[in-house]
Every structure is written in C-alpha cells, then in structure tokens.
Image 1 (cartoon, helix red, strand yellow):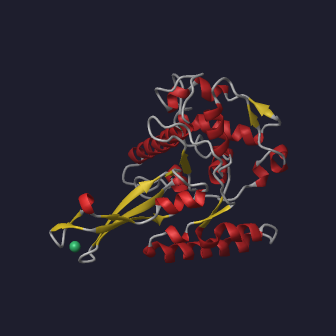
Image 2 (cartoon, helix red, strand yellow):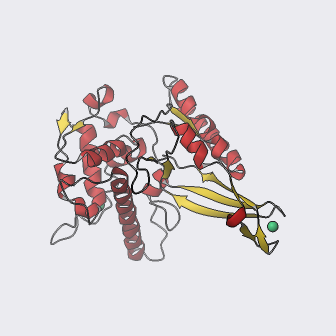
Image 3 (cartoon, helix red, strand yellow):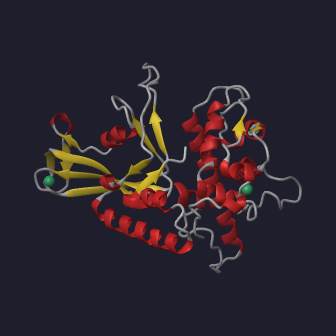
Length: 316
Ligand SMILES: [Zn+2]
Ligand SMILES: [Zn+2]
C-alpha cells in the first residue's frame, strides 16, 4: 500500500501548516490521554492515513444496518483528522474520554492512567481491528488474492508504521556457537537508571552482557554450562520508532523526574545487527533517491540528516 512518510501539506488546515498544534483541554486527569493523542497525531504516516480516511473507508462499522459498531480505529482516525483540519486553537478530547473502554477495558474516565500503557492499548486495538477486517475481506473473496491492505497475513498499516524486530543473541564464549532469537516489537522501553540522556539509555539497553558465575548459559554444542555473551540488536528498524522512558524506579522507588536529554537525530546504525546494517543503508539510499526525484531541494538538509545512517528525527 505504501506509507506516506512525509507531511502532505494539502491535507492540513492552514492553521496547522505553520502554527502550533491544536491544544487539547485537560478534562481531569486526561494528561496521559492528551499526550498520547498528540504523539499519534504528529506521526506523519499515521496522520496521512487518517486524513485520507483510509481506515474508515474500508471499515465495516458504518455499514451495519442496525447499530454502528464502535470501532477504535474509526474513533482515532476521526480524532487525528479533526486535530489537523479544524480551525480552532483548543479542543476537547471528550469523545475518546467517553469511550476509553473501547481501547482499554479497565480504564476509567477521570482516573490517572499510564500514558505508555494507554498507547499500547490504542496501537493494539487498531492493529487487531485491521486484522479482523482483513480476515473478513479474505472470507468474502475466498480464493481471490484481491485484498491489498498490507503484505503477509499478520501485516497491517499499524505494524507497517510502528513494527520492527530486535534480535537477542547469545554467543558461547567456549566454542563460539551463536543462538539467535527474534522478537517483534512495536516500541522499546528503556530503563533510565543512571542515564541522563536518551543516547546513554540506548547504549545501556544494547550493551553486551556476560552470562557467567551463577548465570551461566547451557550451550547446545558444548552440552554444558558455559560463560556466554548476550547482546540485543535491532534486526529490523521500524519506520517510526516509539521509545518509552521508564520513569518509575522499581515498585517502591519514586519517579525519576530529572530531565533526560535527547538530540534531534537518533542514529541507530551502531545498534543494528550486522546482517541488517547493509539492507538498512540500502533502504535509506533507495528512499533518499525517491525523495530527490519527488521534491525540491527545500527540505533536503533536514531529510538527509533524518534518513542518514538509519537516523530518526524526533516528532514529539
Ligand atoms: Zn473502523
Ligand atoms: Zn559452546
């Protein structure tokens, strides 16, 4: 289907082209909700998708004869499109607040909730809705391979935007045998411990760890407990990388409220697993070439920085 990664100015209200984002009122403990909505609204590929009603035009929630089914993706699409297309400075997120349960059953209005948890529920609810629609579509046109929304069976636009993969590798320090495990991710949660910046927290997350002493590793080849090195790396970088900073220190620890510095560009190349580094750079070059063909040179420096070395630009 092809994601549109850059803003489409023709879809935005004049006010949003150059002005600040639409403000969202705090309806009483809704700061977690507002911050998640603002992040999602300013995720260009998702915003473009919503502004073009690409979900609701395929959704079955409007076609049901008796009563419309409340669909989480339709609600989110409406909210995001509204935020980017109304001529207002301030708006109320009351619709979402009133149907919190559609996203997360145990969430209650006016109660303090966790922003990251809410984001996970919203993303999962939209992903599952897409999977349900896809299945329905496939049943309707059995045999025909006409449904083009996404690639493989578990692919959806949500996964295409936020999905990536990490590789966890354990290497035996006796025989050198490597064991790799792949985990699909929609975000990365970073411990802050003694980190003062995003970069430091990332370095700690991807730092190799030696399994030794009471923590030895059972090697398949050596057939005994051995010392080993465990390392995480990025196997597939998501188009949009979501990072959660874990600001709570354990169960009894307080909130880590010190400022965490971050640079505008986050370079992932040193965290990529070796096999992915080549494809990642190739992808970046290919994307870059496409962009050069399409656009004037206006934004190029910015985009160059954004795409170079699989770097991420911050959209918060
Ligand atoms: Zn829907
Ligand atoms: Zn071994």
